[in-house]
Amino acid sequence: MTITLSPGPVAAGRSDRPAPEPPVQPVDFSAYCQDLFGTLARSDQRRWGEVYVRGLLGVSGRKTPARISEHVLGRPAVQQIQQFVNQSPWSCGPVRQRLAGRVSRALRNEAWCVDEVVFTKNGDRSVGVARQYASSLERTVNCQLALATSLVGRHGGVPVSWRLLLPQRWDRDERLRRQAHLPSEERARPRWRYVLEAVDEMLDEWFLEPLPVLLDWRGEGDLGALLRGLEARGLAYLVQVAPTVAVTLPRPCAGSAPGSGTLQELAAHAAQHRERTPIVWQDRATSRPRQSQVLSVAALLQSEAPHGGGAGARAARRPRHLVTDWPYGRPEPRTYWLTNLPARKVADVLPLAQLRALSGQSLERLQQDFGLADFEGRSFRGWHHHVTLASVALGFDALRRP
Image (cartoon, rainbow, N blue to C red; front, side, top):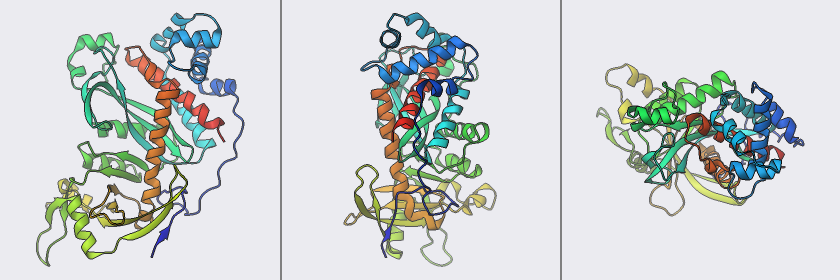
């Protein structure tokens, strides 16, 4: 039997019927900025916020303070813009919360997507810079690494929560920390902790409707800690993983102990004992129908294998599945995911996974068209201000498009 899928929303426990798209309403730019910057204490902060975002939207090429001030004001105002972005003590959190609320109310979002964002740098003084491995580039570069958590739907993605990843060297070098005005509580920590901090902010502080979380974890460690953290928060997830992840394998015969192996071996074993499900779905990028096969099998990480009870035994009872995209004619799967979506939703994995591509396209536009990579400051506060303002610009663009 072939399953034909529509590109509607996918979420555990929801109706399979796609919700209607909200009607597109005209968005007034000044009113939009007044709403998002309404939490800023001073009127001059709110004014410079609008100037900066208007420049990110309107200036072609590199978005520098000089070009923004000339384009928006018709006069030089470099010092004022730099002071607003780098030194002014306004908080990003309320602005991001209001942006998330606007995007949630106006657009039909289907998932939260966490993406690595790489800011390549030449020097070593900007906050968080180091020679470090960037999973999304599959190489080591001199850069800042960040995680952007976006609200994603057919409109694309809008990043609403940002985390700057700190390398270990930034914990040890007090001179660098002082120069970058790095808060004392900001320390290097595992990537999965940054992810859980972002979703906690969106759940517990912003009260957003929980949606499936999409991640690419192929080049990362601590997979079990990430999955357990998402499960403890009641979140559905779809995590792309490497085929070499260690898992338990089925017992070769009755009474024998489970073996150990990889996801690749687990998929090969499952393919010998069950049929793959053919599916047809609409490609969100090209609007063309595509077809492939899906294989699903229960999966238990080797690191969580039960040894006489305790946390491992509890992990064994979680309904976690390996799902593979296995194109026709290929000897092995193309993509491996771990998910806790209900079994009846497993066939929806491929259209849901495509949202990651849409999120990536939006982040590329943020880099190329809205000045995300054009920030030249070095401070922790300035970096967070700039990425927030770039997200505000992209959010306005998403809200005004049909």
